Length: 198
Image (cartoon, rainbow, N blue to C red; front, side):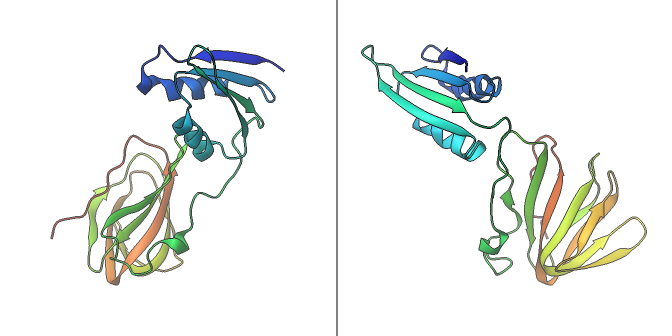
């Protein structure tokens, strides 16, 4: 098995983690990355645990005589393993208890999908607009409301599974109990969801 060495001591701190992840991605299964740093890379390990749980072996070798800190990172799986990333049952039960807008987001940095849990308090809405150039899957988790389309209205209740074709006209309006839904779609540039002023 091969072992590559990467010394990040002279690299700007903001560039170190992306550089290490890129070098790790090029490893074969069983290969190792020998990381030389100017400190123990605890935050990097936390990031590896978030992004690649159970897919690597982290072996701290410890401080060297020159003050550097050496860590050996072994690649165990060819791709990241499926893993739990959240539990919607752990979100606050009462709609409106957390505000309005996106209350949960898919967080792994390396991904092709985006997902958000959107919360609309009673009577709140996402104003009419043409959707992005991608399909969106919506699953209503709690509450109720309506989706206004270019030609009518669809009633939404908990459990509803809805497909929003790319560029389709849409307006969400929460019912008297508010509405919480999960949206899943291909990744796009940064998404910001805010409350609609009344």
